[in-house]
Length: 268
Image (cartoon, rainbow, N blue to C red; front, side, top):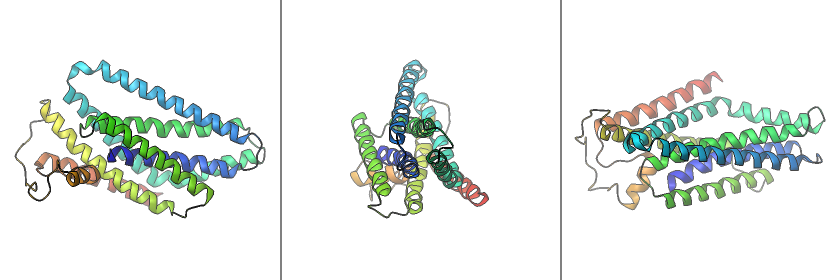
């Protein structure tokens, strides 16, 4: 549940901030709210279609082996989470400035109001499609039930919309840089944990021949199946009996995402 909450919160907050920038830049423009609402609705409908396609893909590939399918979903989710983190580290500010320019151009009459629906719709669709993929990765990890994942999605959605709304109306003063730094680290650790889980599925499917002997055993101190252990597993990918392959996948993913994010951030 916690993994789904973190991912959905991050994606919804990004979409809410984009919508907030557009709303602020077109404040007072007659008809702008209607076009923005149309864009949000179109983006949500597109995200629903993506979710339906993912369900169809799941059914079509059901015969190839559940372990292999789950590993594939996890690997794709890790790559997408990493790409998203790296891209936002270098283009986040640029994207926000572009949204301001579009809103200003509409407000002074240089661009039609329909542009608002297109810009907002694309933003909502992008974040929604990424959310669908990431949630499939969480489900493929087998760590949470569908009910827990659904509850986590609901909590993340409510929290993202609430924080985005409060930031827009100015009721809270949370530095967005600090907020996204915290969520970026959470998402990066989630991706590293997914990579370690993918190694397990690939080994179970016979794709990887890896050592199954644990490097250490911290279960007497903190069992992975306990409530604190599951919390640590979700937040930082904690495993009480990790293998060499799991540690290698976890460390490589962590280093790759953070290293590339720093490189692109400096170049930007």
